[in-house]
Amino acid sequence: MGRIYNFSAGPSMLPEKVLRKAASEMLDYNGSGMSVMEMSHRSKVYESIVDNTENLLRKLMNIPENYTVLFLQGGASQQFAMIPINLMSKNKKADFINTGSWSKKAISEAKLVGDVNIIASSEDKNFSYIPQDYSISPDADYVHITSNNTIEGTRYVNFPNTGDIPLVADMSSNILSEEIDVSKFGLIYAGAQKNLGPAGVTIVIVRNDLIGNHRESAPIFFRYSIHAKDKSLYNTPASYSIYMVGLVLEWLDELGGVKAIENINNEKASLLYDFIDNSKMFTSPVDKKYRSLMNVPFVAPTDELNAKFIVEAQKEGLSTLKGHRSVGGMRASIYNAMPVDGVKKLVDFMNNFEKK
Image (cartoon, rainbow, N blue to C red; front, side):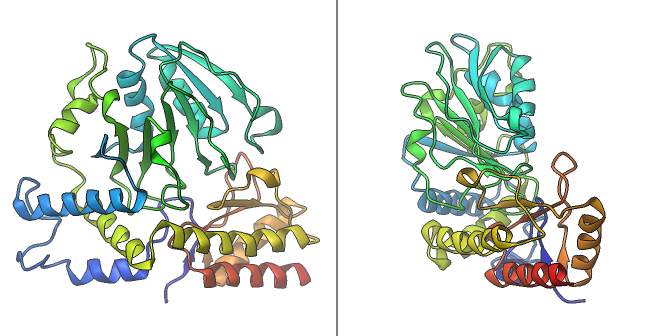
């Protein structure tokens, strides 16, 4: 069987060029005589991989010098705990905007550390929009948002202006999909397994003045300061995953950078949303103003048709289109590595399915 189009929400598909390069270097990376999987994380050759990956990320995201890039483990879920441990230190209070399942998990973890103030929520309409009406607490240690909601299919079009209060964003499912101004954020974090590479490594981009403010009782491993001091090599890192992130960043750089992929992502999303909006069978549950470029939920009129669609799509090489149980129907995750041709094939299948 040949390569399929994988619409999984994560782990997601990777660029074929990246996979082929990784395969060619599997047994011998850069003349070292060994695989990246085998080499010591303390070796010079591996340190060069980490440095190259960080430098590419800084270039592509235009990360200011007063920010530290960390390659950690535990996924975004571990950051739900690490962030309040490290940032909820002065007033022991944080503001959250609740826009879906992942926001709710971040809120639950923060409540174990300090006071959580939910300043806005879209739960009243099943998280189908991004709230715009809220007031930020003047004594909050930070404001937390989920910039793109993988399950619900919504995204922030404009980010909150939090003034002197650090804005923290979970960008797991839309990092590097469109240009952003990193300087507007105190901290950005993202699991790699959607737009950056395979599962195993988590990217944290944190402003330097926010490092070292952890609780005194914080476990050493949960302190950003220890990972910053040791340049993400305090413990054995997810070495192969970091290497793969570096290859993905090289691919994106060669493509023309974030602006180039943003244009491609807009094209893909427009193809799919335009078909859904003109369809007599499929509908989108998301407010048009806040539709995600990365995750597109859609439904047919009945559960039976939804199930039939998923089975028949799989036979056509269109994989992992079942929607999350909280939303139902289907979900097409069209991350950076999904080519335009993959979305075109999906739209053609949807059209034929509807006619049939």
